[in-house]
Amino acid sequence: MQIREVELDDVLVVAPAGRVDSTSSTQLEQLLFDRLDGGSRRMIVDLAGIDYISSAGLRVLLWLAKRMQAEKGDLVLCGMGEPVRQVFELAGLLPLFAVEGTRDEALTRLGRKST
Amino acid sequence: MAGVRQAAGELEAFAAAHGLAPDEIWSVQVALDEVLSNVVRHGYGGEGGERTVELAFGLAAGVLEVVIVDDALPFDARQVPEPDTETPIEERKIGGLGVAITRRLMDGIEYERRDGMNRLVLRKRMAPAGGAG
Image (cartoon, rainbow over all chains, first blue to last red; front, side):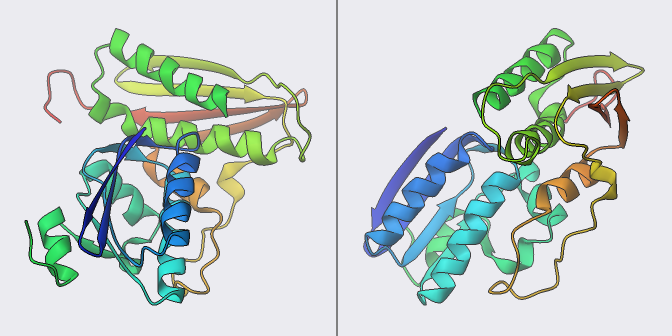
C-alpha cells in the first residue's frame, strides 16, 4: 500500500492506495497515529485509490473518527468506490462518518475553498 | 500476517488464470482476509509460532469456492452474533465486524469441525462470462 499526503492550509489529506487489509492497515494506522500526535485535527481520508478494504481497515478509520471526535477535530472521508462503500455499509458504519464524493467536496465541507 | 498477504496473491493468481476480473473477486479477497486474520489473531489462543493453513480454490458452475482448513481452535463464523450497529460512535465496540462482513459478502458459508481441524468453505457467485462489471 502506498499512502500519499497533501497539506492544504490546515487540512491534511491522506490518500492510501491499493488494498487496506489486515497486513497493510497497520501502516495506515501508524501514519494516522503520527499525524494526530503531530497535531493534525482537520483531516480528509481520500479512498479513491483503494481497491478494497477489510474490517482491519475499517477499525483504523473508526478509531480515527473516535479520536477526532474526542479531540474536537474534523474528519471527512471521500472517494469511496463501490467495493469500499459496500463494506462500510455492510458493517453499518456509513452513518458514523462524514462522507463526501470527491476531495473537492470534502474540502468544501471543511470550509476550505477547493483547488 | 505475511501468510495472509500470500493468500491474497494466490487468490489473485487463481482468478487471473480463470479470467475473473479484480472487481469480481474483491469480495472474496475481503472475506479471505477476514477469515485468515481471525485465525492468526485468535485461533491459537495467543500462542506464537508458524502455523499451516491449507487453502484450495475452485470454480464450478460460475461459483468461486475457497476452502480454508486450519488446526486452530474451533470457530464457526456462522454462530457469531451480529455486531451492534446502533450504538453511538463513542460507545461503539470494535469487534465482530469481520465476521459480519464475511457473512454478508458471501453467497454461502459452510463450516465443519473434523479430526481437530476447522474446515470453512466460502462461496461466491461470479458474474456470467462476458458480463460487464
